[in-house]
Every structure is written in structure tokens, then in C-alpha cells.
Length: 300
Image (cartoon, rainbow, N blue to C red; front, side):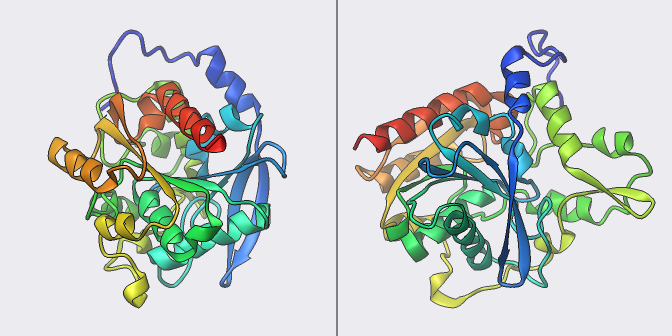
């Protein structure tokens, strides 16, 4: 449901327009037979910051976030296979997605130790990458990923992906809703992301994700495939931070559990008034939190 708050004007504010005016470059990397597309900002050779989207989303969800880091970082946002402008696979899993993230990072700068931010399902992907090759990662930021539900988006997106499509771009864009839902969505952010989330296929417009992602179980790759976020935290060889959204997918009890699990390993940060998708309702608060983290890690 869209917010009716009068402060949420349809007109984009100057900061948002400046961010979109900072157009990304593109990077394409073949990983295990699939072309993986990424957006990039900033100069290669700067510290590497990776932004990993959630289930059913794509790299364009970071278009208004990434430019805030372009002066100090080389920012890379991949489309995981089956998402956005990347190619599809016969099957999907945390293992293959994590290898994609690591391969894109290596292509962007083979000598860099990136900070990787993962939202929702992307937090699971990021954690899996850190377990596999944490010695090559400076730190990870898990953004509102639940402890046990790898893809809180799955149930609804499974149904959306089966839709036969829409005749016009405007018709499908009008159906854009974040999954899980939230009450407040900045309309100018929603309009941009919705526009970037669709493609024409034949005579109809469809969403840019493969419905097969959410059909059945993901491919398991044995003991290396983390079963729970507790396991990820316990095995993490690199620095870690957790960002919890006040109205997101983490209730108070789970939040306290995560805080206890982290102990002194990394900060637990609360984003007030944020839904599960803070880039939609609290983008500047998200930027401020991430800026603080990367600056803190850069001097310690």
C-alpha cells in the first residue's frame, strides 16, 4: 500500500535526481556458463563496495544509493542469475549466487578485499560468500535478512512470476509492490525501480526475474551450503555488521537473538521507521548507516 503521508511528494527531491544523474557503467562477467550483468559507479582501483539485491529484485534497486559512495569507492551491484539483466540457469542456489558475487568482485578488482552488503535473500548470498572465501572479503553487512527464511519474498513472487504478463509497460508498472509489503514507499523511488524492473517479451511486458527461482527448493551443495543464519554468523571469518529495519522481517525476539549471536564481532544497527526495503522508504538513513560502517572499517 502506498503512503498517503503529505510529506511524500510525487516530485523527486534534488538529492534523488542528482543520484540518478550519476549514470552507472556496466560490467558483464561469465560465471559457470551464465552472463552476469552488473552496474558500477566510481573509479576502478578505489576500495570495492558490492551491493547485492534481494529475491526478485535487481541491481537497479541501488541506483539512488550507490552514487553516494562513488567518490570514495568503486561500487558494483550485480544482478544475480535469474534476476535483472543477467542470464538464467536451469537451477539456482546460494552456492552459485555466492560464486557469482565473488567472480564479479574479482573481475572488478582482483586484488581488492570488498565490503559486501546483502539485502534480504542477498544477505544469505553474502553470508555464503563470506563462509566460502572470507579471507578475500573485508567485511559483510547483512540487511534485514531473517535467521531461517532464506527468501521471505518467495511465496508471493512465485505467484507473480506465473502471471501471463501485461499488454503495456504502464499496466505492469502500476502493479509494482515490494515483497514483503510495507506501508510507506517513496513514490519517486517506486516509479524508478518499477520502470527498471520490467522488459518486453513478445507482445507482453514481464518482470525481470525468472519464476523458476521460487519453484521448489534451491539446489543444495552439501555441507558448504549454510542451513541457518546462526551457522553463517558462527563460521564467519571476516567482519560483519547487521542492519535491522524497524518494520522489516525481524521481530524483537529475533533481533535480540541476532544481537546476542554477534556479541563483540560486529555492530547491530537499528534503522528506525524503515520497512523491510529501506531503499524504498528510508534511503538516506540507509546511506548514513552504510557510510558510517565503511568509514569505521576503513580506519580499523
